[in-house]
Image (cartoon, one colour):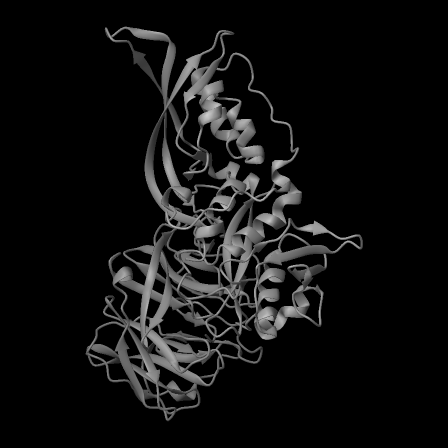
Length: 578
């Protein structure tokens, strides 16, 4: 596998990343590389010694706080350990992120006759784990209760020190956010036409080491969630031939080693992967080398604009305003005009393709519903599906005549025009990993078509879309939100790696969450009348929600919600193409 040879290096270099479950679960085959001599091993910020006179509970709390600083292999945290424990502590095998409000509980250490040892004590760290950081610096949501015992000993000078530290690192959510930077590393779609972002987290300090750590993460390949859906054009044996450095003229120099023989088009894809991955940590020009020679023969210096063509245009065309369903009618968000193609049916929900040329409508039919698909200007033909009482709102693949829906909250189907003549047929999607969470009330494909978001069993769940032998499946599903998204009712993708969620929660009616679930950002609730029941979002478009009073929009989470120029009343369902 492509990450085997690089695991040891990145685990050591990122030894403070959240909750690295990494090295403990790394395949045993393959010779691990030694840590590249890196700037993060040089002189960094001097670690501050613990205050004198700390109680065992105070010592452990401060140790957890200090563990967020990964400089010099967690030098600051090691000062809270006994000398022997400091030498032997494995800070790489497991990294966990826990809620800020954790408990420290004292327990006595008993001697062989049941007597309490006055110079030893057990301190139990009890709290809620949010997740872990994998060996490749990707965050894996994993909410559960944890209880970890640490044994502390009183030293000859009267101070307490930790003799038995936890396996790996435990860090609080706030400390993690203060010490780690979220970055996007980019991989290629299977056809090498566009690149796809993958979220990672690297220590902010020392700042000079951040570009190296970003590229280490890139060279390890896609995260487990995207593996199999995207690829890296960078060969698996490629490594940094030297640390990232600054040239005399201020450019950032990246030298890839062991790249081998590659075509110029593939080298340009690699340039896109590297340049876009570094975009979040530098504004400098980037000089790209392969074994000391220009990576691309006719070009040495690169900026993000030079590889902009590799970023897919995911948003709808500006002239496509979007639509909404209200009182059984489908109308334009631009001027409330009736969409003629669906004028003769009782519309429950609808979706327009990203290009705007196709329309899918769920309409009431007898005691159930039916799916109709066709050109936006009509006619819409019924798609033969089993009789259903409920279909989720359709969701389109970005660049193909294909859309998905869920029958009766349990069966995910894809509807495809394989002929190009408007003849639509359906096949089941293998979504067992999704349906295991419970009834599916909402399903949305990401705007690059590589991921899926759902509300299943009352929780927000994301997964990866995989294809093999012409069949689609949903894999690598994860629950998002850490119980901070209570009662979700609608979800949408404004970006390939972020979601917006509508909930019936009066205090957090609308929130934005990364695809890895780490950060939840609440929108203001000003002017909204809960409950919110529908949401629309797309790149470079305002977020629109529907509440008890009508339709409202904002462009930023910190803004007050503003009404649309018209008011369709409650229960409208807005949507953008896609």
